[in-house]
Image 1: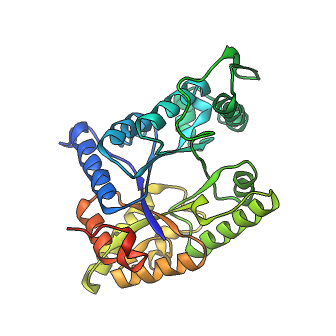
Image 2: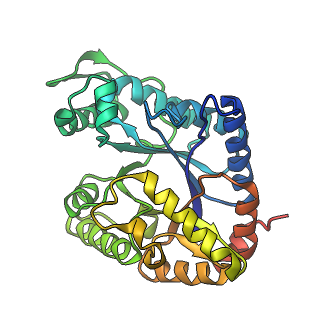
Length: 329
Protein backbone atom coordinates (compact mmCIF):
# COMPACT_ATOMS: atom_id res chain seq x y z
CA UNK A 1 0.00 0.00 0.00
CA UNK A 2 1.17 3.52 -0.76
CA UNK A 3 -0.08 6.91 0.37
CA UNK A 4 -0.54 10.31 -1.22
CA UNK A 5 -2.49 13.53 -0.78
CA UNK A 6 -5.73 14.90 -2.23
CA UNK A 7 -6.82 18.51 -1.81
CA UNK A 8 -5.45 21.99 -2.19
CA UNK A 9 -4.85 25.38 -0.66
CA UNK A 10 -7.89 27.27 0.56
CA UNK A 11 -8.07 30.95 1.40
CA UNK A 12 -10.91 33.36 1.97
CA UNK A 13 -10.52 37.11 1.78
CA UNK A 14 -11.93 39.26 4.52
CA UNK A 15 -11.33 36.89 7.43
CA UNK A 16 -7.81 37.93 8.35
CA UNK A 17 -6.02 35.46 6.09
CA UNK A 18 -4.10 36.70 3.09
CA UNK A 19 -3.98 34.45 0.03
CA UNK A 20 -0.22 34.00 0.25
CA UNK A 21 -0.45 32.69 3.82
CA UNK A 22 -2.87 29.94 2.83
CA UNK A 23 -0.72 28.92 -0.10
CA UNK A 24 2.48 28.99 1.91
CA UNK A 25 1.12 26.62 4.56
CA UNK A 26 -0.14 24.22 1.90
CA UNK A 27 3.23 24.30 0.14
CA UNK A 28 4.97 23.47 3.44
CA UNK A 29 2.52 20.56 3.85
CA UNK A 30 3.38 19.12 0.42
CA UNK A 31 7.12 19.58 0.95
CA UNK A 32 6.86 17.62 4.20
CA UNK A 33 4.81 14.91 2.48
CA UNK A 34 7.56 14.60 -0.11
CA UNK A 35 10.14 14.20 2.65
CA UNK A 36 8.03 11.58 4.44
CA UNK A 37 7.68 9.40 1.36
CA UNK A 38 4.14 10.17 0.22
CA UNK A 39 3.88 9.21 -3.43
CA UNK A 40 1.28 11.47 -5.07
CA UNK A 41 -0.50 14.77 -4.75
CA UNK A 42 -3.75 15.35 -6.62
CA UNK A 43 -4.69 19.02 -6.44
CA UNK A 44 -8.33 20.05 -6.56
CA UNK A 45 -9.37 22.93 -8.82
CA UNK A 46 -12.64 24.89 -8.64
CA UNK A 47 -13.93 28.28 -9.74
CA UNK A 48 -16.32 30.98 -8.49
CA UNK A 49 -16.91 29.35 -5.09
CA UNK A 50 -16.15 32.39 -2.91
CA UNK A 51 -14.30 29.97 -0.60
CA UNK A 52 -10.78 30.60 -1.87
CA UNK A 53 -10.23 27.22 -3.51
CA UNK A 54 -7.36 26.76 -5.97
CA UNK A 55 -8.43 27.99 -9.41
CA UNK A 56 -5.12 27.49 -11.26
CA UNK A 57 -3.79 24.11 -10.24
CA UNK A 58 -1.04 23.84 -12.84
CA UNK A 59 0.47 27.15 -11.70
CA UNK A 60 0.68 25.89 -8.12
CA UNK A 61 1.99 22.51 -9.25
CA UNK A 62 4.72 24.19 -11.30
CA UNK A 63 5.91 25.94 -8.14
CA UNK A 64 5.76 22.67 -6.21
CA UNK A 65 7.79 20.99 -8.95
CA UNK A 66 10.68 23.23 -7.98
CA UNK A 67 10.21 22.66 -4.23
CA UNK A 68 9.88 18.85 -4.22
CA UNK A 69 11.91 15.95 -5.57
CA UNK A 70 9.91 12.73 -5.58
CA UNK A 71 6.18 13.20 -5.05
CA UNK A 72 4.07 12.98 -8.21
CA UNK A 73 2.00 16.05 -9.06
CA UNK A 74 -1.55 15.56 -10.30
CA UNK A 75 -4.55 17.63 -11.32
CA UNK A 76 -7.93 16.72 -9.85
CA UNK A 77 -9.22 17.70 -12.21
CA UNK A 78 -8.84 19.93 -15.25
CA UNK A 79 -12.40 20.31 -16.57
CA UNK A 80 -11.76 20.08 -20.29
CA UNK A 81 -15.01 21.64 -21.63
CA UNK A 82 -13.80 25.05 -20.40
CA UNK A 83 -10.37 25.00 -22.07
CA UNK A 84 -8.57 25.21 -25.39
CA UNK A 85 -7.13 21.68 -25.56
CA UNK A 86 -3.93 22.66 -27.37
CA UNK A 87 -3.05 25.23 -24.71
CA UNK A 88 -3.72 22.65 -21.99
CA UNK A 89 -1.55 20.07 -23.77
CA UNK A 90 1.31 22.57 -23.92
CA UNK A 91 0.93 23.53 -20.25
CA UNK A 92 0.87 19.93 -19.03
CA UNK A 93 3.86 19.00 -21.18
CA UNK A 94 5.80 21.98 -19.80
CA UNK A 95 4.94 20.97 -16.24
CA UNK A 96 6.05 17.42 -17.01
CA UNK A 97 9.45 18.71 -18.12
CA UNK A 98 9.85 21.02 -15.15
CA UNK A 99 8.98 18.24 -12.70
CA UNK A 100 11.24 15.62 -14.26
CA UNK A 101 8.33 13.51 -15.49
CA UNK A 102 6.21 13.54 -12.32
CA UNK A 103 2.85 14.70 -13.74
CA UNK A 104 -0.44 12.83 -13.41
CA UNK A 105 -3.04 14.45 -15.66
CA UNK A 106 -6.46 14.18 -14.04
CA UNK A 107 -9.33 15.31 -16.26
CA UNK A 108 -13.10 15.49 -16.11
CA UNK A 109 -16.12 16.85 -17.88
CA UNK A 110 -17.35 18.86 -14.87
CA UNK A 111 -20.54 18.75 -12.86
CA UNK A 112 -21.05 22.09 -11.08
CA UNK A 113 -23.71 24.20 -12.78
CA UNK A 114 -22.35 27.46 -11.31
CA UNK A 115 -18.94 26.87 -12.88
CA UNK A 116 -20.42 26.23 -16.33
CA UNK A 117 -22.59 29.31 -15.96
CA UNK A 118 -19.57 31.38 -14.94
CA UNK A 119 -17.67 30.32 -18.06
CA UNK A 120 -20.78 30.72 -20.26
CA UNK A 121 -20.57 27.07 -21.35
CA UNK A 122 -23.81 25.04 -21.53
CA UNK A 123 -23.48 22.09 -19.17
CA UNK A 124 -25.39 19.86 -21.59
CA UNK A 125 -22.44 20.21 -23.99
CA UNK A 126 -19.96 18.91 -21.41
CA UNK A 127 -19.60 15.37 -22.72
CA UNK A 128 -19.10 16.27 -26.38
CA UNK A 129 -16.67 19.06 -25.50
CA UNK A 130 -14.71 16.72 -23.22
CA UNK A 131 -14.52 13.97 -25.84
CA UNK A 132 -13.25 16.28 -28.56
CA UNK A 133 -10.76 18.04 -26.28
CA UNK A 134 -9.22 14.73 -25.20
CA UNK A 135 -9.05 13.56 -28.81
CA UNK A 136 -7.02 16.66 -29.65
CA UNK A 137 -4.70 16.31 -26.66
CA UNK A 138 -3.95 12.63 -27.28
CA UNK A 139 -3.38 13.29 -30.98
CA UNK A 140 -1.05 16.19 -30.20
CA UNK A 141 1.02 14.20 -27.71
CA UNK A 142 1.36 11.07 -29.86
CA UNK A 143 1.84 12.55 -33.33
CA UNK A 144 5.37 12.20 -34.64
CA UNK A 145 4.94 15.21 -36.90
CA UNK A 146 2.59 18.14 -37.25
CA UNK A 147 -1.10 17.33 -37.15
CA UNK A 148 -4.48 18.80 -38.05
CA UNK A 149 -7.88 18.48 -36.44
CA UNK A 150 -11.30 19.56 -37.64
CA UNK A 151 -14.11 18.86 -35.22
CA UNK A 152 -17.31 20.43 -34.01
CA UNK A 153 -15.66 22.84 -31.54
CA UNK A 154 -11.99 22.99 -32.50
CA UNK A 155 -10.07 23.42 -35.76
CA UNK A 156 -6.28 23.27 -36.11
CA UNK A 157 -4.16 23.08 -39.24
CA UNK A 158 -0.58 21.79 -39.37
CA UNK A 159 0.34 22.42 -35.73
CA UNK A 160 2.72 20.77 -33.27
CA UNK A 161 2.57 20.56 -29.47
CA UNK A 162 5.71 22.08 -27.99
CA UNK A 163 7.34 20.98 -25.83
CA UNK A 164 6.68 17.26 -25.92
CA UNK A 165 6.02 15.77 -22.48
CA UNK A 166 8.91 13.97 -20.82
CA UNK A 167 6.78 10.89 -20.06
CA UNK A 168 6.11 8.94 -23.23
CA UNK A 169 3.78 8.66 -24.94
CA UNK A 170 2.28 11.12 -22.44
CA UNK A 171 1.65 11.58 -18.69
CA UNK A 172 -0.80 9.09 -17.16
CA UNK A 173 -4.42 10.10 -17.73
CA UNK A 174 -6.72 9.93 -14.70
CA UNK A 175 -10.52 10.13 -14.73
CA UNK A 176 -12.65 10.82 -11.67
CA UNK A 177 -15.49 8.31 -11.91
CA UNK A 178 -18.09 6.65 -9.70
CA UNK A 179 -20.95 5.38 -11.83
CA UNK A 180 -20.62 1.95 -13.48
CA UNK A 181 -20.74 3.46 -16.97
CA UNK A 182 -18.00 6.01 -16.24
CA UNK A 183 -15.81 3.37 -14.58
CA UNK A 184 -16.17 1.09 -17.60
CA UNK A 185 -15.32 3.98 -19.88
CA UNK A 186 -12.19 4.81 -17.90
CA UNK A 187 -11.01 1.21 -18.25
CA UNK A 188 -11.76 0.95 -21.98
CA UNK A 189 -10.23 4.30 -22.94
CA UNK A 190 -6.95 3.98 -21.07
CA UNK A 191 -7.61 6.20 -18.07
CA UNK A 192 -6.49 5.48 -14.54
CA UNK A 193 -9.28 5.75 -11.98
CA UNK A 194 -9.77 8.37 -9.24
CA UNK A 195 -12.31 7.33 -6.58
CA UNK A 196 -13.96 9.91 -4.35
CA UNK A 197 -13.71 10.46 -0.62
CA UNK A 198 -17.45 9.96 0.08
CA UNK A 199 -17.85 6.42 -1.25
CA UNK A 200 -18.19 3.79 1.47
CA UNK A 201 -15.64 1.00 1.78
CA UNK A 202 -17.91 -1.59 0.15
CA UNK A 203 -18.59 0.79 -2.73
CA UNK A 204 -14.87 1.33 -3.28
CA UNK A 205 -14.24 -2.41 -3.39
CA UNK A 206 -17.06 -2.95 -5.92
CA UNK A 207 -15.84 -0.12 -8.12
CA UNK A 208 -12.28 -1.43 -8.19
CA UNK A 209 -13.56 -4.91 -9.07
CA UNK A 210 -15.61 -3.46 -11.93
CA UNK A 211 -12.66 -1.45 -13.23
CA UNK A 212 -10.39 -4.51 -13.09
CA UNK A 213 -12.99 -6.63 -14.89
CA UNK A 214 -13.45 -4.04 -17.63
CA UNK A 215 -9.67 -3.66 -18.09
CA UNK A 216 -9.43 -7.40 -18.63
CA UNK A 217 -12.29 -7.33 -21.15
CA UNK A 218 -10.54 -4.54 -23.04
CA UNK A 219 -7.23 -6.44 -23.12
CA UNK A 220 -5.61 -3.89 -20.84
CA UNK A 221 -3.12 -5.04 -18.23
CA UNK A 222 -4.41 -4.20 -14.75
CA UNK A 223 -2.38 -3.41 -11.65
CA UNK A 224 -3.52 -1.76 -8.39
CA UNK A 225 -1.60 1.44 -9.09
CA UNK A 226 -4.12 2.30 -11.80
CA UNK A 227 -6.61 3.24 -9.07
CA UNK A 228 -6.31 5.95 -6.40
CA UNK A 229 -8.84 6.29 -3.58
CA UNK A 230 -9.35 9.52 -1.64
CA UNK A 231 -10.03 9.11 2.09
CA UNK A 232 -10.60 11.84 4.67
CA UNK A 233 -8.17 11.62 7.59
CA UNK A 234 -9.30 12.30 11.19
CA UNK A 235 -6.94 10.57 13.58
CA UNK A 236 -7.67 10.64 17.31
CA UNK A 237 -5.75 9.26 20.27
CA UNK A 238 -8.46 8.78 22.92
CA UNK A 239 -12.19 8.15 23.12
CA UNK A 240 -12.64 11.61 24.62
CA UNK A 241 -11.79 13.03 21.19
CA UNK A 242 -14.29 10.85 19.32
CA UNK A 243 -17.42 12.98 19.74
CA UNK A 244 -15.60 16.05 18.46
CA UNK A 245 -14.27 14.06 15.50
CA UNK A 246 -17.81 12.95 14.59
CA UNK A 247 -19.03 16.54 14.86
CA UNK A 248 -16.25 17.71 12.58
CA UNK A 249 -17.08 14.97 10.08
CA UNK A 250 -20.73 16.03 10.07
CA UNK A 251 -19.78 19.65 9.41
CA UNK A 252 -17.50 18.61 6.55
CA UNK A 253 -20.20 16.50 4.96
CA UNK A 254 -22.74 19.29 5.25
CA UNK A 255 -20.66 21.56 3.03
CA UNK A 256 -19.49 19.02 0.45
CA UNK A 257 -22.96 18.94 -1.04
CA UNK A 258 -25.37 16.48 -2.65
CA UNK A 259 -25.79 14.33 0.44
CA UNK A 260 -29.59 14.31 0.54
CA UNK A 261 -29.76 11.07 -1.42
CA UNK A 262 -28.45 8.99 1.49
CA UNK A 263 -28.58 11.34 4.50
CA UNK A 264 -24.91 10.58 5.12
CA UNK A 265 -24.38 13.66 7.27
CA UNK A 266 -27.05 12.36 9.67
CA UNK A 267 -25.36 8.99 10.28
CA UNK A 268 -21.66 9.78 10.50
CA UNK A 269 -21.06 7.01 13.04
CA UNK A 270 -22.00 4.44 10.37
CA UNK A 271 -19.87 6.19 7.75
CA UNK A 272 -17.05 3.87 6.62
CA UNK A 273 -15.55 6.34 4.14
CA UNK A 274 -13.20 8.36 6.39
CA UNK A 275 -10.09 7.22 8.17
CA UNK A 276 -11.59 8.31 11.48
CA UNK A 277 -10.40 6.84 14.74
CA UNK A 278 -7.31 5.84 16.64
CA UNK A 279 -4.19 4.76 14.73
CA UNK A 280 -5.15 1.13 15.38
CA UNK A 281 -8.66 1.68 13.99
CA UNK A 282 -7.30 3.47 10.95
CA UNK A 283 -4.84 0.65 10.28
CA UNK A 284 -7.73 -1.84 10.42
CA UNK A 285 -9.77 0.27 7.99
CA UNK A 286 -6.81 0.51 5.63
CA UNK A 287 -6.23 -3.25 5.76
CA UNK A 288 -9.88 -3.75 4.80
CA UNK A 289 -9.38 -1.45 1.82
CA UNK A 290 -6.11 -3.17 0.93
CA UNK A 291 -7.80 -6.58 0.94
CA UNK A 292 -10.40 -5.19 -1.47
CA UNK A 293 -7.77 -3.90 -3.90
CA UNK A 294 -7.47 -0.28 -2.76
CA UNK A 295 -3.72 0.01 -2.28
CA UNK A 296 -3.19 3.62 -3.40
CA UNK A 297 -4.73 5.90 -0.74
CA UNK A 298 -4.92 9.70 -1.03
CA UNK A 299 -5.35 11.44 2.31
CA UNK A 300 -7.75 14.39 2.50
CA UNK A 301 -6.97 16.83 5.32
CA UNK A 302 -8.82 20.15 4.91
CA UNK A 303 -6.43 21.74 7.40
CA UNK A 304 -3.32 20.58 5.50
CA UNK A 305 -1.70 19.96 8.88
CA UNK A 306 1.98 19.05 8.91
CA UNK A 307 1.53 17.70 12.43
CA UNK A 308 -1.26 15.35 11.32
CA UNK A 309 0.85 14.19 8.40
CA UNK A 310 3.80 13.43 10.64
CA UNK A 311 1.58 11.55 13.09
CA UNK A 312 0.15 9.43 10.28
CA UNK A 313 3.63 8.69 8.95
CA UNK A 314 4.86 7.76 12.41
CA UNK A 315 1.88 5.77 13.72
CA UNK A 316 0.16 4.27 10.66
CA UNK A 317 2.51 4.00 7.69
CA UNK A 318 4.98 1.61 9.37
CA UNK A 319 2.25 -1.05 9.27
CA UNK A 320 2.32 -0.92 5.46
CA UNK A 321 5.72 -1.74 3.97
CA UNK A 322 7.44 0.48 6.48
CA UNK A 323 10.84 0.29 4.83
CA UNK A 324 9.56 2.41 1.94
CA UNK A 325 8.85 5.41 4.12
CA UNK A 326 10.94 7.87 6.05
CA UNK A 327 10.27 8.21 9.75
CA UNK A 328 8.65 11.42 10.97
CA UNK A 329 10.89 13.49 13.15
